[in-house]
Length: 189
Image 1 (cartoon, one colour):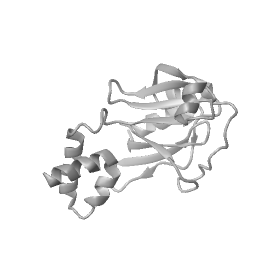
Image 2: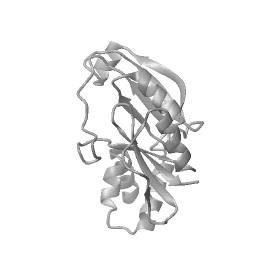
Image 3: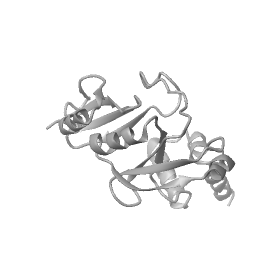
Image 4: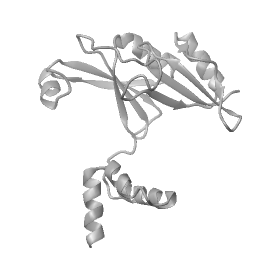
């Protein structure tokens, strides 16, 4: 019973604390313990949404659909009261445009929003240039086609594709309209 209570406390406190506590366990044990947390119902979905404030939502929407292949789905408005009372903004309203990669509840979701006045731009020269979320990884079946589509839509390639350790998988980093890093990982065809 004592272990059960401890486990529930960790679930309530969050996955990160739980993983720190079990840090000494072997990898297989950790995977089982994480799976056990998921089974407890601590998460209503096992994918996350990523919200990004952009300088030009129309330009970014075009990039995420045409360059990356996301599909726009219905978004929503956030009122000044909701924005301020929740701590998201200083009572500035905004519209959230939602884009998915895939279908159903497990699809990756990107939420794009433009909030006036525009905030300071983050230094995204390299992923270690500033703290916070630094890049988006998209696993593809053909990096050549993905890069060609992105370039045709106006993306800038950071460097030529880099072959990874297995010799068949490539990594290519591009920039979105605000200079955020997006990486394609997959084979060339």
